[in-house]
Image 1 (cartoon, rainbow, N blue to C red):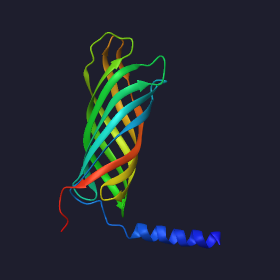
Image 2 (image 1 turned 90 degrees about the vertical axis):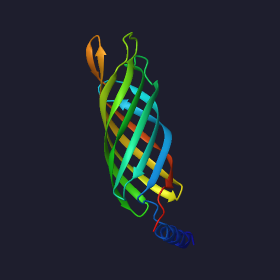
Image 3 (image 1 turned 60 degrees about the horizontal axis):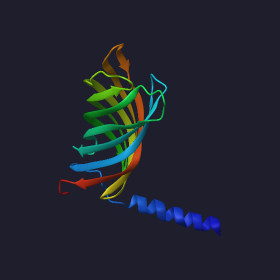
Image 4 (image 1 turned 90 degrees about the horizontal axis):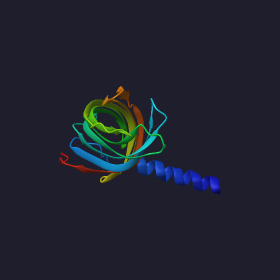
Length: 184
Protein backbone atom coordinates (compact mmCIF):
# COMPACT_ATOMS: atom_id res chain seq x y z
CA UNK A 1 0.00 0.00 0.00
CA UNK A 2 2.80 2.43 0.94
CA UNK A 3 4.71 1.55 -2.23
CA UNK A 4 1.64 2.20 -4.40
CA UNK A 5 1.05 5.52 -2.65
CA UNK A 6 4.69 6.57 -3.27
CA UNK A 7 4.46 5.59 -6.94
CA UNK A 8 1.24 7.60 -7.40
CA UNK A 9 2.73 10.57 -5.50
CA UNK A 10 5.91 10.50 -7.66
CA UNK A 11 3.75 10.33 -10.81
CA UNK A 12 1.90 13.52 -9.81
CA UNK A 13 5.10 15.33 -8.74
CA UNK A 14 6.94 14.52 -11.98
CA UNK A 15 3.84 15.35 -14.01
CA UNK A 16 3.38 18.71 -12.28
CA UNK A 17 7.05 19.61 -12.82
CA UNK A 18 6.79 18.81 -16.52
CA UNK A 19 3.59 20.84 -16.90
CA UNK A 20 5.00 24.08 -15.46
CA UNK A 21 5.20 27.28 -17.45
CA UNK A 22 8.63 28.33 -18.65
CA UNK A 23 9.68 31.24 -16.45
CA UNK A 24 13.21 31.75 -17.79
CA UNK A 25 12.71 34.17 -20.67
CA UNK A 26 14.41 37.22 -22.18
CA UNK A 27 13.68 40.32 -20.13
CA UNK A 28 13.42 38.55 -16.78
CA UNK A 29 14.75 40.59 -13.87
CA UNK A 30 15.71 38.50 -10.81
CA UNK A 31 16.96 39.70 -7.41
CA UNK A 32 17.51 38.57 -3.85
CA UNK A 33 19.19 39.38 -0.54
CA UNK A 34 20.53 36.89 1.96
CA UNK A 35 23.22 36.15 4.55
CA UNK A 36 26.29 34.36 3.17
CA UNK A 37 29.10 32.58 5.06
CA UNK A 38 32.60 32.55 3.62
CA UNK A 39 36.02 31.10 4.24
CA UNK A 40 39.25 32.89 3.42
CA UNK A 41 41.75 30.89 1.38
CA UNK A 42 44.95 32.65 2.54
CA UNK A 43 44.05 33.08 6.24
CA UNK A 44 42.36 31.04 8.93
CA UNK A 45 39.23 33.16 8.98
CA UNK A 46 35.53 32.68 8.32
CA UNK A 47 33.31 35.67 7.62
CA UNK A 48 29.61 36.48 7.35
CA UNK A 49 28.30 38.83 4.63
CA UNK A 50 24.98 40.45 3.87
CA UNK A 51 24.70 39.93 0.14
CA UNK A 52 22.32 40.75 -2.66
CA UNK A 53 22.14 40.41 -6.41
CA UNK A 54 20.23 41.75 -9.38
CA UNK A 55 20.24 39.91 -12.70
CA UNK A 56 18.77 40.77 -16.09
CA UNK A 57 18.32 38.02 -18.70
CA UNK A 58 19.24 39.05 -22.25
CA UNK A 59 17.94 35.67 -23.44
CA UNK A 60 17.63 32.18 -21.93
CA UNK A 61 21.41 31.61 -22.04
CA UNK A 62 23.01 34.97 -21.13
CA UNK A 63 22.45 37.53 -18.38
CA UNK A 64 24.04 40.57 -16.80
CA UNK A 65 24.44 40.25 -13.04
CA UNK A 66 25.50 42.52 -10.21
CA UNK A 67 26.41 41.26 -6.71
CA UNK A 68 27.22 43.23 -3.57
CA UNK A 69 28.74 41.91 -0.33
CA UNK A 70 28.65 43.88 2.91
CA UNK A 71 30.94 42.47 5.62
CA UNK A 72 28.95 41.71 8.76
CA UNK A 73 31.18 39.79 11.14
CA UNK A 74 34.17 37.49 11.41
CA UNK A 75 33.97 34.17 13.18
CA UNK A 76 37.55 34.46 14.45
CA UNK A 77 39.15 36.39 17.32
CA UNK A 78 42.31 37.33 15.36
CA UNK A 79 40.53 38.38 12.19
CA UNK A 80 42.50 39.91 9.33
CA UNK A 81 39.42 41.90 8.21
CA UNK A 82 37.42 44.24 10.40
CA UNK A 83 34.88 45.38 7.84
CA UNK A 84 34.49 45.66 4.11
CA UNK A 85 32.37 46.08 1.03
CA UNK A 86 32.61 44.36 -2.36
CA UNK A 87 30.65 45.06 -5.52
CA UNK A 88 30.77 43.21 -8.84
CA UNK A 89 29.15 43.46 -12.26
CA UNK A 90 29.52 40.95 -15.07
CA UNK A 91 27.99 38.33 -17.31
CA UNK A 92 26.69 34.81 -16.71
CA UNK A 93 26.17 31.84 -19.03
CA UNK A 94 23.09 29.74 -18.24
CA UNK A 95 22.48 26.06 -18.87
CA UNK A 96 18.77 25.65 -18.24
CA UNK A 97 16.37 22.79 -18.65
CA UNK A 98 12.75 23.71 -18.07
CA UNK A 99 12.70 25.83 -14.93
CA UNK A 100 15.97 24.45 -13.60
CA UNK A 101 18.95 26.73 -14.29
CA UNK A 102 22.64 26.07 -13.81
CA UNK A 103 25.03 28.95 -14.42
CA UNK A 104 28.60 30.12 -14.37
CA UNK A 105 29.66 33.75 -14.41
CA UNK A 106 32.57 36.14 -14.26
CA UNK A 107 32.42 39.60 -12.66
CA UNK A 108 35.10 42.25 -12.33
CA UNK A 109 34.58 44.60 -9.41
CA UNK A 110 35.90 46.70 -6.57
CA UNK A 111 36.49 46.02 -2.90
CA UNK A 112 36.84 48.44 -0.02
CA UNK A 113 38.09 46.70 3.14
CA UNK A 114 39.64 47.58 6.47
CA UNK A 115 42.19 45.41 8.19
CA UNK A 116 41.59 44.72 11.85
CA UNK A 117 43.81 46.47 14.40
CA UNK A 118 44.98 48.92 11.75
CA UNK A 119 44.85 52.68 11.49
CA UNK A 120 45.47 53.12 7.76
CA UNK A 121 42.79 54.49 5.46
CA UNK A 122 40.89 51.95 3.38
CA UNK A 123 41.29 52.17 -0.40
CA UNK A 124 39.33 50.91 -3.37
CA UNK A 125 41.06 47.86 -4.81
CA UNK A 126 40.30 45.94 -8.00
CA UNK A 127 38.77 42.53 -7.48
CA UNK A 128 37.14 39.73 -9.48
CA UNK A 129 34.56 37.04 -8.81
CA UNK A 130 33.92 33.68 -10.46
CA UNK A 131 30.53 32.14 -9.67
CA UNK A 132 28.87 28.78 -10.20
CA UNK A 133 25.34 28.09 -9.10
CA UNK A 134 21.86 26.77 -9.66
CA UNK A 135 18.31 28.10 -9.47
CA UNK A 136 14.91 26.50 -9.60
CA UNK A 137 12.04 28.72 -10.71
CA UNK A 138 9.00 27.58 -8.75
CA UNK A 139 6.49 30.23 -9.75
CA UNK A 140 6.43 33.28 -11.98
CA UNK A 141 7.44 35.51 -9.06
CA UNK A 142 9.99 33.52 -7.06
CA UNK A 143 12.77 30.93 -7.22
CA UNK A 144 15.24 29.13 -4.99
CA UNK A 145 18.96 29.54 -5.60
CA UNK A 146 22.36 28.40 -4.34
CA UNK A 147 25.75 29.56 -5.57
CA UNK A 148 29.41 29.38 -4.69
CA UNK A 149 31.59 32.38 -5.50
CA UNK A 150 35.37 32.55 -5.61
CA UNK A 151 36.50 36.11 -4.90
CA UNK A 152 40.03 37.13 -5.90
CA UNK A 153 41.17 40.29 -4.12
CA UNK A 154 43.99 42.01 -2.31
CA UNK A 155 43.99 44.45 0.54
CA UNK A 156 46.56 46.97 -0.74
CA UNK A 157 48.15 49.87 1.07
CA UNK A 158 48.93 48.15 4.38
CA UNK A 159 52.24 48.86 6.13
CA UNK A 160 53.36 45.31 5.25
CA UNK A 161 52.33 45.56 1.60
CA UNK A 162 49.38 43.90 -0.13
CA UNK A 163 47.54 41.11 1.69
CA UNK A 164 45.66 38.42 -0.26
CA UNK A 165 41.99 38.31 0.79
CA UNK A 166 40.69 35.56 -1.52
CA UNK A 167 37.47 33.92 -0.31
CA UNK A 168 34.91 31.27 -1.12
CA UNK A 169 31.43 32.64 -0.40
CA UNK A 170 28.32 30.45 -0.29
CA UNK A 171 24.87 31.98 -0.73
CA UNK A 172 21.47 30.30 -0.90
CA UNK A 173 17.91 31.38 -0.43
CA UNK A 174 14.71 32.63 -1.96
CA UNK A 175 14.90 34.97 -4.95
CA UNK A 176 12.26 37.02 -6.71
CA UNK A 177 11.77 37.79 -10.38
CA UNK A 178 9.60 39.87 -12.70
CA UNK A 179 9.12 39.69 -16.43
CA UNK A 180 9.93 43.09 -17.96
CA UNK A 181 8.91 42.08 -21.49
CA UNK A 182 5.57 40.69 -22.60
CA UNK A 183 5.66 37.22 -24.07
CA UNK A 184 4.70 37.03 -27.74
